Length: 166
Image (tube, rainbow, N blue to C red):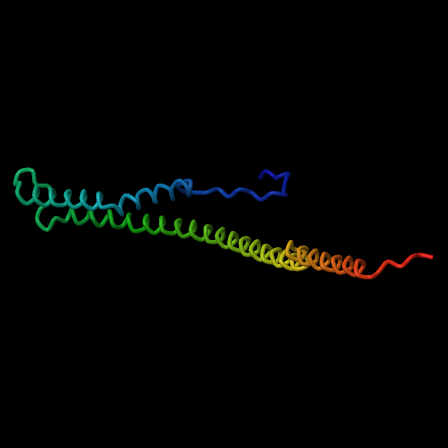
């Protein structure tokens, strides 16, 4: 028996059976599920069944499936046996994608909420800062009051006689 020199990594298990890419198989199953879920498929399947039944009911020499149409029943059962798991696999993959998208949407919503709260706080700060800002109306009122005071002072100066300075 040969001794392994590097024991830091585990041995690879030998797989017995068919090896396949799960993602590729999932994409294949989704394509089949999309096809099985179309009106075109239902129309084609209905036409095939009608032609099958008519051909096997009318033709005596070329008949390959006699009346209770056991071969047709077997074919439809086989189709259903494969279609159901493929559809379930496609639904599971869609559910996984939906779950990932939901997590992304939640993260975006949380960021949006945080940004909105930040902007609300900033807006409140700006409003508070603006309450102490002098407006044009304030300046006009103060200027008018100063003008009035100056006019009164001038009037007072004019009304009082000038005293000679000694």
